[in-house]
Every structure is written in C-alpha cells, then in structure tokens.
Length: 209
Image (cartoon, rainbow, N blue to C red; front, side, top):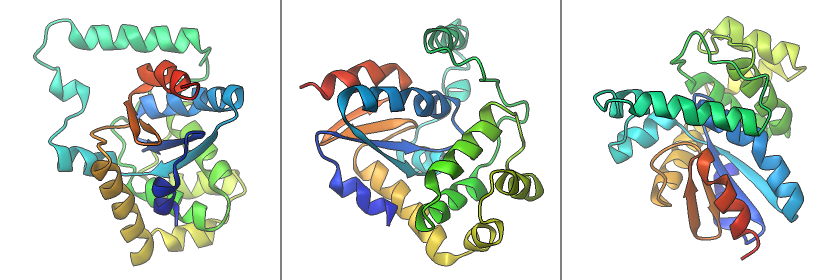
C-alpha cells in the first residue's frame, strides 16, 4: 500500500505528501522531478487529505490564518509569482472554483496506485485543477477527466466508494501528521522534514548531505 512507502524512505528517496487542493503542491509537483533527476533520487508521492491534516494539527489555510495581518497575503502572492517565474510554470492558473473539495480526487489517487496508473492519474488531476481550472468536486467533471486521460474510469469510480480505499487515505493522512506534517506540501528525506515549496532548495541540499 502507498502508506507503507512512508517507512521505506531512504537518503535518496523524497517522500512527497500532497493533496490536489493545494496550488503549492502543484508547483512542487512540477519542480520535484528536476531535483530528483539531478540527484539520482526517487520520488514517492503520497496522497493525503489537507483538511484532515489541518484538523489534526489546528492549522488553517493562509487566507484564513493571515487574513488579519496587513500585507501578509499580498506578500504571499508576490512570493508565488516569483516562484512561478523562476521555474517557468507558465501553464499555472488559479482555479476559479477554489476552494475545491478534493476528497473524490484523493480517493482516486489511492485507487490509481493500486492499479499502477499513479503517474498518469496525478498528472491528469494536477493539470485539471491548476492548469485547466476545472471543478473536480463535480463527479461528472472528475469522471470526464479520467476518461480524457485514458484511465480506468469504472474501476477508479468504484474504488472511490470502497471502505478500504477510504481507510487507506485516512491512514496516509494520519501517518503524515505522525511524522510531523502540518500542511501541504511536505517532504521527507529520511527523518528530515521540509515544509512548503519554498524549501525545495533545502530538499536538494539534503540530498548532497
């Protein structure tokens, strides 16, 4: 199961805890492969529920946590634009339906890992969410994205209602919190944790340590 990958992390393995709901996770998803390739590392992308992490840790989305801090959210947007420019993420667009509930998509991510289509699935969902601006919490939209990507639609749709798939997603989320995660994206190299796309430089440095 994907959750077991958490215990197999080695020095050359980057555990990437993600939820499609996070634009920062999308940006990390686009940048991580280059870091891994340059350093001979492997990425294990582990689906979690950002809302579950927030609930377990008492954290909040930046738009809520910093709503009362003058200039903070404007600066967050400035940093995001700098990151986009630096890494040439020209396809990115903020989803007009944000916030989008990703429970269905994240259950699908667990299913995709059981059927060896994780890479194609993750690409389709991140693209749908943060490049195409689709409303992924609409079951019909979600199913259409699966179909367009050539994924096993009926199997994944059925799995999204499977108690075992639901339980595995919850377990991944609990495991991430147990390892210290309080938000998305979170990265682990061995026992070292790094939070946020802004720490990707540190992730690369850790691969040389």
